[in-house]
Image (cartoon, rainbow, N blue to C red; front, top):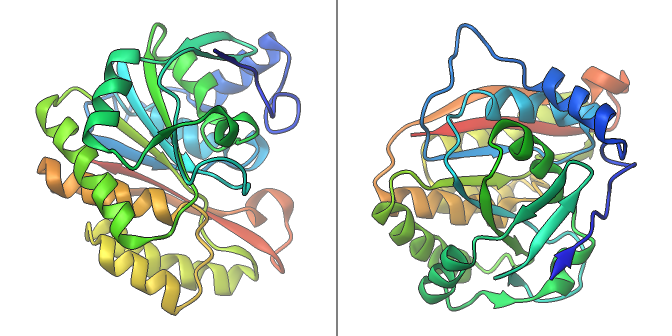
Length: 268
């Protein structure tokens, strides 16, 4: 199966040269933070105008391996609530990125709640916008895409434990998780709410993150993927989380009345 781009020309440039230039600009090497191995990261998935530099800042610091697990959110109520694609390729203006079929089969064995489903992935942008960065920073990579539309805590943690078993067996495997944080409240409120969620993530506390987002109505669209990621990291023995940067859309738009929060984190 070939999955065609859904948001090229809207979330990021459709022209290959323009896209390559933008990705290179967003992911410029940081002499103070040379690329190093990490187990996982969390990056935003808004249009590149708003969050491309944040995603590039994190991914530019990771010594990316050949095989990558991509865990994102299913924004639209179509398809399976726990959706994977086990074969095929995803096309972007920079070329085709192949699904790692062997790794996908391993994930399906460890995570039986996942269903092979192209419908859930067809229009979803949260994973697609990561691919041009991976294509530029790690040519030849293979990946397994997973999109979650459920907020059922037992399902999320069961998925996380399965992914953790896979991560524990292969220390070189990398888990890229994507989420934006609080949506469409003021800059002041969003920063306060985001901080509550960020504190739980830095503590590697999936139950605490889930509870604080529900209690304080933190509209973190990737809450499900974040809970699964933290569960996986705990199961794989990860012990260190780092906040790289926290920002909001107001830094670009200038509108502080209604913003979206973004946070970029790395995990060892």
